[in-house]
Image 1 (spheres, helix red, strand yellow):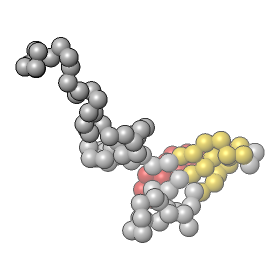
Image 2: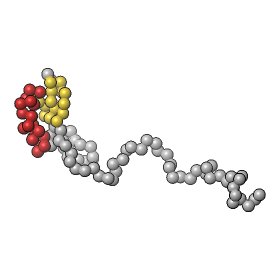
Image 3: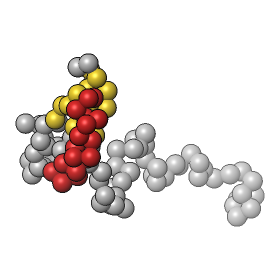
Image 4: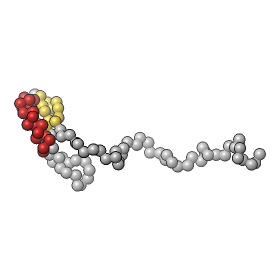
Length: 98
């Protein structure tokens, strides 16, 4: 049985059901109700080849916390001091050594 990502307390995901295109066409509304109520996926095949997947919609709003996790492209110190950038200038008006 496949498991969702998320650690040891994740809920088990039921295996996807496979139906042919003809059966899907004949029972489309019933399959949609089953997907909604049981939170299962249905893979639709045409001549034995998977062509589409019917899956439940996640209606819970995304959390505003952590939604950018894993999107940082570079791992550099963004707030650390840059000593060269703050080096004293020869034309510094506050420098009394003139």
